Image 1 (spheres, helix red, strand yellow):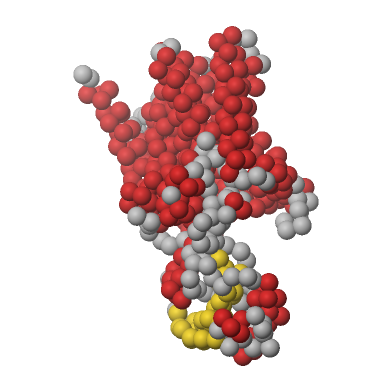
Image 2: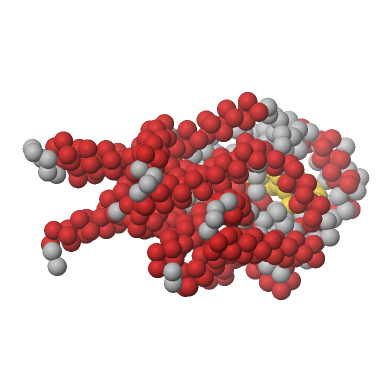
Length: 521
């Protein structure tokens, strides 16, 4: 074997290993962090769904999500949250069953999928354009704030993107080899993705539209097969949720309309939507990333007659169109959730990698006479610089979910500790009233394992809820809130216990059952 041929391959694999190590280190740096940041919203709800399945039983829940139900057993039909397919929360359930209910056990799923996506992207680009271009594509993917911020988020995006890349890679292998196993793997990846979340259906729609517009009869047959699979899968899902909850179809339709348009809770104009989405894309992909990707797009278009560039250009176009449709149609969703643009990672990474490789080829040609290692040095410098910029930007985007005051500094230990106090003081049937948590989040409810009524700051609000509540009720009052002392003074007779957590004082109130019906003074 020629040593000169081995050396570039070895260097490429070493570079890929270094990229994966850096990416994994950043994603897993706080893998055991409690659900206390805004990005942890989804982690809390899908962990709650898994918790409910484990405590109620797989047969009782039929594996369905009860992501926002924190009350006692049995789970009522209104407690089912049936807006998404079930594979994600079932995956979290399996991790909890194997390793216990830990935050790190839930985060293993998106982190594993994100690391796998880097490898799949590398294989896809290497098969078409060579190892150095593939390494640069992988480096861009692992350095963008979008992947660094949301690559460890317990939600659908990392999983669906991984399955999309896997499907595209095995499709490439099938087109080259025509082996049936690769075609079966292609359909299998897409079918799995359908039962993870709905964006896979958008990807299939874009893919089938392209194939049906072509004159390739085999691809047309594959498109019709995919559309039939998608329709049957969706029909089975709709039938399933209808049996679990009678009003599930109406609820799903209403949610669909909410996610498409502006509403009273999140009002915005088209220009406001465009400004916020555009700003979010720049923050998560960086001006330099978008600029280099634009250069790569121009290079790919110019060299589109070459088979490798034509294939990578097609892959980028399909995924870009899929996410553009997702962001553009579901405007309410993309206005609220910045991670809806997560799938742009594929076209941005591929196109930026192509542009960077072209730049390095130019450096090699220019510097050949005086420094043969200039291209390798520039490659290493670019990768390290990109990783540092991306990680620094990601750290600036992280924000903590505050339960007391949006302008006060809170310890990360506060939410789990307060949740444990609520869990220890109140039975599972208790509805716990609070005078804090100005914005909704499931973080505290997950650790409390109790239904919480938040942001009730006046006595009249407590009186109204107490009078309407048929079951058990209790309260936690944050003494740092305005009007807290008056609220505590006007509580019905009962047990009052003052506790101090992380330099904050709380009053835990448990009423006397006999006097509960009399309400507040």
